[in-house]
Image (cartoon, rainbow, N blue to C red):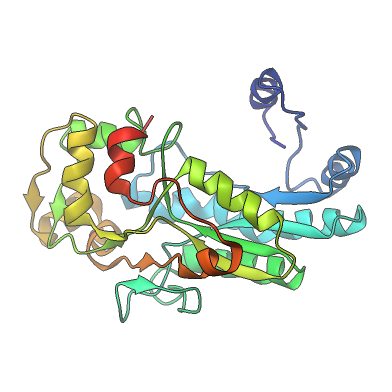
Length: 277
């Protein structure tokens, strides 16, 4: 499902049956779910710009926050009315509260105190999906073809333009996920029968000061420069500096144990070299 006729046509040209519908149109959404004779629903609704300005992060993520709250409620209602009993929904693995250890399991608290405009809609989506008997997949930072980390994506462009320095210690921990591995985890979740929340990430959470130089080499960008935190705050804002230095990574132990899932690209180190797209 997409609200764009152009995107629907592109999906159809790939052999996919596409429906044009807005998640805020409850009646149209119900018609689409019924017409599709859906057995299960995979909920991946987002509304993010191609490149996010960290100085405007709250404003640029507000629309996706509303989708997570209202769009999710509409989708669950449509599923229930159409007799669809299973839903798998996208969440994110990088909104854990930046306290304690650097790698978090699914029971760790979300960053409602430090990043409420992202964490609170995420928590709302997760509550709704779990209450409906669904599965929440907290995906890591996507890389691979068509993503912001692709060779022609916004992160690569920023590095080539020398606009992605390592600010401060660069100790914030990122957990990556190749898009092909996101697909395989989603398929595995469709076979699961109990409500659950899973981190879907690769095996190697990494601090920014480790992965940015490797990513720069992979996309043919010059080595990143280093900047003190005060320069970063002036250039990109407080939130960008905090993410670069305080972000927590995520553990994939639970989904491996319960669903038997294994990422094809176990580490971003190999993935950046062979599968950026």
